Image 1 (cartoon, helix red, strand yellow):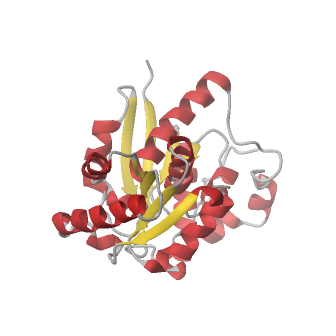
Image 2: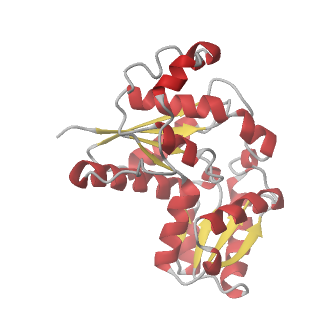
Length: 261
């Protein structure tokens, strides 16, 4: 049986998370799946600010397009903000694209009536709230709970992080009425089991949610031909315009769109 190849992309200009996340996903993947975890060649080390988010867009999208050219089956955008998810689906034809927020929210609405999202900092909440509304899940949101930790802090002292997670997760269930808890950052990988055991309720690890959704969506593509519609919002830019305007030359991506129609 042919292996399915999934690329997980940390949209960051540093590779701190690549090796541990690859090891984590190797334990979770299906037997017929190969996983690669990569970062960008430049850029900020986290996306906690709108400016940083904007900086990674071009490189992220071109990395995803290159993955399609290299015959990967799926790409996972490994940030809970779901940066450039719709843009990525727009430029790809066969490559499955998933992202943590959309995948996790879909699961949460199945597993319980209301969910809470545990974030690192209050700064993150407005963008995440916008995604909750965009994905049609606003009526299921119980609360946001903040840890007072940045992306790069979660694994510096894991016992401290776990204690803060336990405190906020318990409040989310007991005070806010959540039936499901979402760990609202891919850097919170590895903590869900302890929390789930403590709460007796589903705790969604968003890295796993996006990755397993990618596996599932590849199956849907291969067995039923189900992919994002190219009628309307995900219509791909015309290759004649890309070539005619010299965009490959301008952005140093010669050959990235070669062969497209």
